[in-house]
Image (cartoon, rainbow, N blue to C red):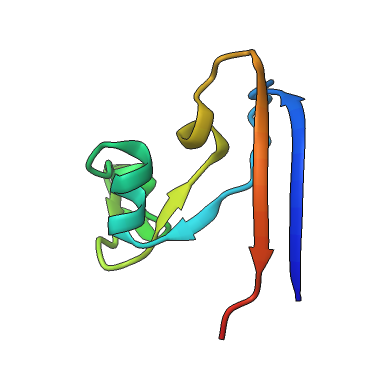
Length: 84
């Protein structure tokens, strides 16, 4: 089932964001940067309180990666389609 949405909304950046888990290639293509430790979906905290990412895991792509923290109106177009 395919759904298409288009809307305009205020980019509020309230800190309660959803995310998508994507592969490395997609992350770099969208963000224009190499991933940092906290971009990885999985990892663990060591005894000294440092986050050690599982660099084989997927990466988290948040709304701010798509349109920043602008505090401006943004136009969003989504096509949601399940793939096998």
